[in-house]
Length: 161
Image 1 (cartoon, rainbow, N blue to C red):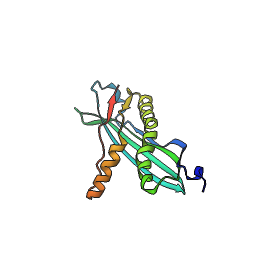
Image 2 (cartoon, rainbow, N blue to C red):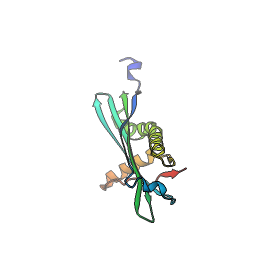
Image 3 (cartoon, rainbow, N blue to C red):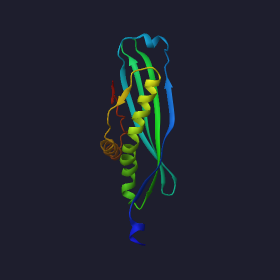
Image 4 (cartoon, one colour):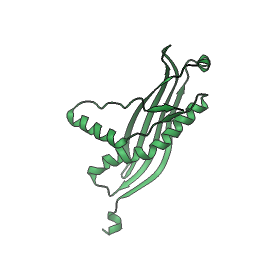
């Protein structure tokens, strides 16, 4: 094989919103509230092989805004931001890290924009998701897998502006 055939290849084929859901269970009354909600973020990643060297990676955010005093949900947004990536000539032992760290890092800014835009279009002030260290999450998940315990979900990683 020639040197160019041996070089690692990483191509972003497509970035897209795979699924998007918005619930405002107490509308229109919730728009009259003056209390600032408590924002909770649950974040997860996943990947699958589409065929051969083509992979789909999904980063999912579930953002819940809850009024503390009344224990009432203002809104709930669930967004699945996905991407199709072509990965070739990457060692097998590194593919999992590429899918669990590099790809989510690429998708996260799109997810962040999708969540903020959806919340704003719903009539609420924007929710800006704080940056996420996918490398730390990946390593924590690997450590938990080797220890035999289920991985934890990072939470409350959002700010309201």
